[in-house]
Image (cartoon, rainbow, N blue to C red; front, side, top):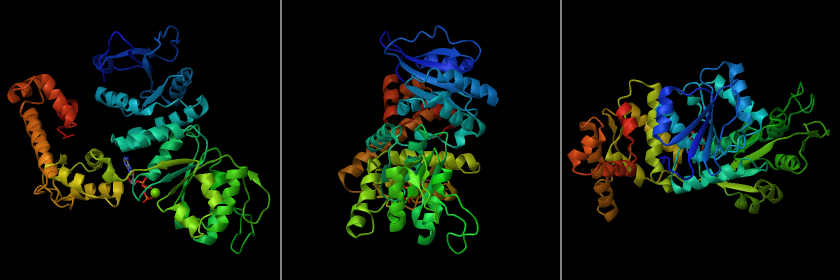
Length: 452
Ligand SMILES: Nc1ncnc2c1ncn2[C@@H]1O[C@H](COP(=O)(O)OP(=O)(O)OP(=O)(O)O)[C@@H](O)[C@H]1O
Ligand SMILES: [Mg+2]
């Protein structure tokens, strides 16, 4: 975060009561603060045109009524360009700093008050730090991922069918949820269905419901997915597996906004957004006569392409550390805290056919079997590429050596930047620059000793 200057500033409008250390952290990071508590009125907020403004909704110590009051207040400011929520579990300044950093990725127009209340009271009830919301669930900073995030942000508020494509395990479902979370439908249902996992003869009934006696065994009326998700989003995973008769019915939903329960010809109006995902080539399926071209054109209005993990560069390491940190939260006996240079190198060199899901599985297994604080390539069951004879291997080795030296020096000097700079014989600015280059965050190192 840049320090405040005489030009356009950055300002946090905080709906609630920030702690003293949070006020300090914000000031130190160059953010101006306007705190607005329910009951205190909102007059004289005094925002300057051109300022970057973040709305922060603080729900830490309120009961549901207080939370609603804060939401109500915040909804008057829904023109704010960003909206972040401080859930109950986040109480320290570093967590708030992380949240602010995340705001750079949000750029969300706050949803209308009704669904905002729904979304926020839902968050306040559950420990939100355990269930990342919207774009927070999508870890990654690579250019490929930033393009995807930008597309999600653009597509979310547009109430049109969306097709998410990408190889297995690339995060298609996570992206679909983010689209829903950032849409006006956020307070309503997100209803996923894997079209490949249901027997063909039951798909129609699952999606659209059936009347009593519609077929043998239909002993009672059943409401289908589209009716139960009314107002929300239906996520149709593996849409390529949808049988042809169900494709015809789905086309009707998209064209006319109505369904018919199996065994009835009474059209019922439904209001749902359809997000579909596929890892097969639908164009090929059309050519083979397995998929209706007209349905494809309807679904393919907005197209979100999820990148392969191998094309996401340093995200691989970022995700690996993220999964390890999450694992450690639930398994306190885990010794592993980070990844060795050879593990990072091996992860960057690997092709990841199972993409993010494969990385998650390998990291969890490695966290269990690793015997030291740093997970090695062997723990991940990846080949150690240290001996790679080509130039790229050498470059990598040099970068890794630099990182290891820096990290060791920081550790030896108790994460004191001035001391580390003296030991290395460089300026403090250089230490900060190197930390940025190697994605080492001193605050975090100081707190946990985790290598990030
Ligand atoms: N960018 C990401 N950040 C954090 N976790 C992610 C990310 N992308 C995917 N994941 C995790 O990876 C796993 C696979 O993601 P998801 O189920 O969304 O993939 P998919 O593309 O739908 O896979 P499939 O084609 O097999 O259905 C999940 O556990 C998900 O939480
Ligand atoms: Mg999936």
